[in-house]
Image 1 (cartoon, rainbow, N blue to C red):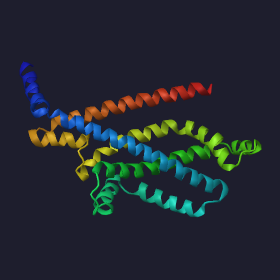
Image 2 (tube, helix red, strand yellow):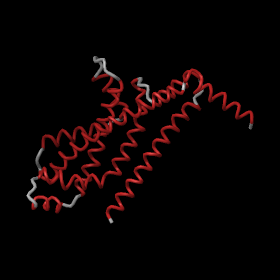
Image 3 (cartoon, rainbow, N blue to C red):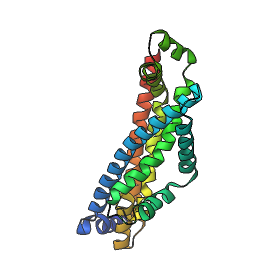
Image 4 (cartoon, rainbow, N blue to C red):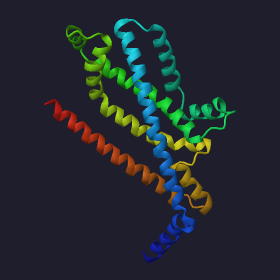
Amino acid sequence: MTEWIETFKIKFTNNFITDNRWKYLWDGLGVTLKVTFFAVLIGILLGFTIAIIRSTHDKTGKLKILDFFCRVYLTVIRGTPVVVQLLIIYFVIFASVNIDKVLVAIIAFGINSGAYVAEIVRSGIMSIDQGQMEAGRSLGFNYVQTMYYIILPQAFKNVLPALANEFIVLLKETSVSGFIALQDLTKGGDIIRGRTYDALMPLLAVALIYLVIVVLLSKGVEMMERRLRSSEH
C-alpha cells in the first residue's frame, strides 16, 4: 500500500506539479467555459429566432421563404457531426483569414446549438393551447404582442429544463475543439500526456473536471425543475 501511495505521489508530481503543468488544465478550463458561455448565447439567439419563424409559419402559413431556409439550416446542422462543422468553418470558411480559434469555436458550437435550441423552443411554443393566442387577441394584442407577452413566457417555462440539458451537452461537445488546435480543457490534458508519456492521470483529471461541472449543472437543473413544479401548484 505504501509503495502504491509513493508511486501515486511521483506520478501526480510529474503530471501536475513539475513545470506547473496543472496550468494547462486551468487555462484549458477557462477556454472551455468561455467557448461554452458565448456559444450558448448564440444558440439562444439563433434558436429562438428560428423557433418563432417556424412556429409562425405552422400557425399562420406566413414566412414561407424564411421557414424554408430555417428547415434547410436545421437539416444540415442536425444531420452532420459537430466536428465536421467545426473543421469546415475553420479550414474552409475562415481559411484565408487570420482569426482567433476561440472565436471560430464559439461560432461553430453556437450555430450547432442553435439548431437544437430551435426545435426545443418550437416544441414548447406549439404545446401552448391555441386558446392562449385567442385570449391575447381578445385583449387587443396583435400577433407579435401575443407571442411576446403570453406565448413565449409559457413556452420558455415549459422547455427550460430541456434547454438547460442542451447546454450541458454543449459543454461536453466543446471537448472536440482540439481538432483545430485550440487549447481547451481536453487539449490541456493531452499536452500533459505528451510531456509525461503518462495518459492515465491527466486524462482522468480532465474527465473528473468535466464530471464535476456536469454534476453541478445537473443539480442546478434539478433545482430549477422542482421550483417550476412548485410554482405550478
